[in-house]
Image (cartoon, rainbow, N blue to C red):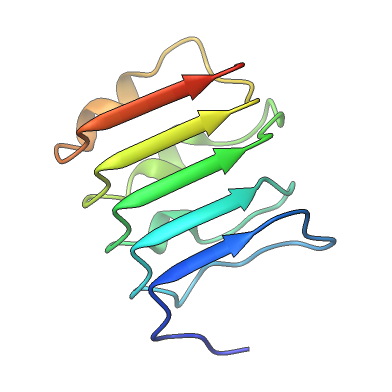
Length: 102
């Protein structure tokens, strides 16, 4: 599917892998993590991200967040986070960080 112009997306309980590559117009994203997610770091216009149930200890947090230069609001719920969150310092526009049950 090509959803190049979509600005808001919510994906809850997907059954397969998710590839966000090509959704460069996306400004808001809510999704339940699926192992093997791809292209999160390509969402250059993303401003609001809610990530739920990221329990994959091998998730490359620093790599996946490296391209999110316009991220303003980040909400993490029920996630296994790395001990070092310094990768978020590269997100200069980040105004709000919410961490729940992680």
